Length: 135
Image (cartoon, helix red, strand yellow):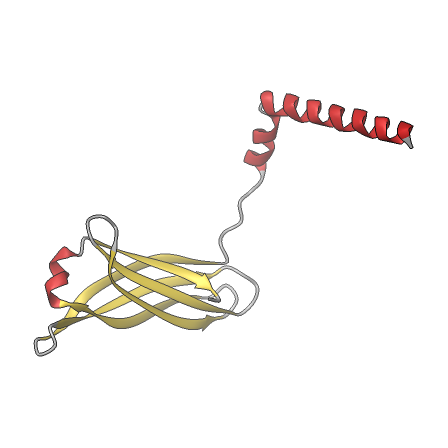
């Protein structure tokens, strides 16, 4: 039993030394660089928004947003698209989410509406759309 333990320790030490040598000579990063990255399961290709109707009585403005989303998988997926209007610090001022089923390799344009406080509308500097599968 003692011999097996020593042999195992020697093997682990050699493996560690080989790993350190590879890491020091950039062999491992070369392996990582040659591996092709697969596209995400779902991705947002484009998005945009615009104000629509001002609801003066409640102090809110309706805005319409749309996102072009692609399902890169070979399976039908339920995709949730989260849309944010952002201020200077990229903090969300208004948010919305919608979902839709996408067929394999299907690209669709998803359109929805939401509301923002009218007084916050001038603070919007950018927007962000994020697609996720499941919750």
